[in-house]
Amino acid sequence: MNDALRTVIVGFVAGALGVLVFHQLGFWLSNELGYTRAVLYNMRGVPPWGVPTIVSSAFWGGLWGAVAAFLVPRLPGALGGVLGWILFAAIVVSLVNWFVVLPIKGLPMGGGFRLPGVVVVPIVYGFWGFGMWVFARLLRSTLNWR
Image 1 (cartoon, rainbow, N blue to C red):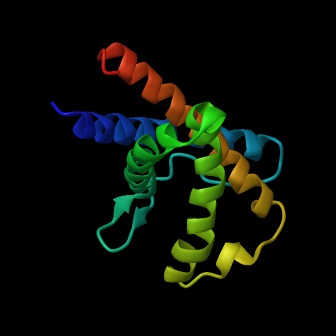
Image 2: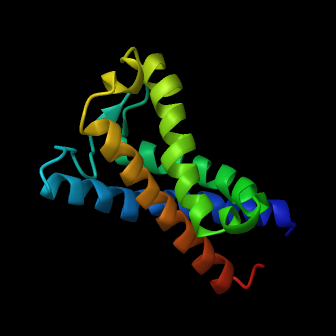
């Protein structure tokens, strides 16, 4: 198996698992602290095919994980490690979500940039980025893929 395919597999699995564990844990903590009322492991169907929200989120998290797996290790210095994964998820994914995904869905950019969401979302996404890094390292180590 070539390195590019390994990177895609590791990134996708790390991103999907990161959503299922760290992303949901981040929103659970935010709920517990009273900042959000996010529905965890939401099974409500997402148009057009009615796929459960959590499955859709894990899929998109996997795609973002594959992108991060290619991009982050090529960044200079400390950005090529855990810090890069965290910042990629917290900044890049948040910005794409706010300025591309929400308008496509007919929602206001940045969700209207209201507090606490404008602060909570990048923090939770950063937590997910940390989770992607953890799972990517575990997968590479377990499969002996360097």
